[in-house]
Amino acid sequence: MLKFYFNASPNPAKVALFLEEAGMPYEAIPIDTRTGEQFGAEFVALNPNAKVPVIVDGDVRVFDSTAILLYLSEKTGQYLSGSGAQARGELLSWLMFVASGIGPYSGQAVHFRHYAPADQQYAHDRYQYEARRHYSILDAQLVSRRFLLGEKYTIVDMAAWGWARVVPFVLGDTAWSTMPHLQRWFETISARPAAIRANALKDRFTFKAEMDQEARRIMFPHIVNA
Image 1 (cartoon, helix red, strand yellow):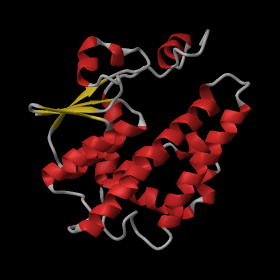
Image 2: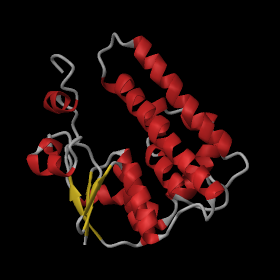
Image 3: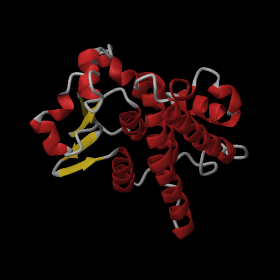
C-alpha cells in the first residue's frame, strides 16, 4: 500500500486531496514538524530536504508536492487537462505557477506576518504584496472559468487548493472579499466529499498545536533566541 507522509500544512493537503479524489488506498503517516520529526534519520533518507509530503509507492519514492501530483496523475491517468501539446503546456505552466509563486510567496508572507521578529516591516510588506498579486492572478483566471484550466477539474486545482485553504492566514481575514472568483472556486472544491475527507485527515492524529519556544527553535533555527 502507498505510504503518505504528511502533516496539516498546505503542501500535504494537495496530495491528500488527490489520493481521496482518485480513491487510492494509502497509509497516512504523520510527521510532526513542530517537534522535529522531519529531521529524523529515517525521514531524511526519504526526503533529504526534511519536508513533507513524501510518498513511497512500492519501490518508488517521490518527494515535493508538485512532483507527487504529477507522478500520481500520470500513473493513474486521472486529473490531467487532456491530450495534446497545448493542454499539456497549459497544465504544466499553471502547475509551476503554483509551485514557484503561490507556495513560496504564501509561505514567506505567513512567516513575516505571524512569526518573524517585529522589526521586519519591509519583508512583511514585500511578501504580502507578492502573495496577494499571485492570488489575484488566480482570481482573474477564474473570471470566466469554473476551474483553473476551464471546465475540467485537474491537479492544478488541487495544487492551488492546498494553499487557498489558508488565504485568510496568509493575507488577513478580509482577503476573500477582494477575490470573489477565487473564493467561489475554493468553496466549490472544498464542498467536494474528497476535499472534506482530505481536510479531516489531520484530525485522526495528534500534532503539536503550540508554536512555543521549542517549536520556534525547530522551525526557525536561523532566528537567534527564537
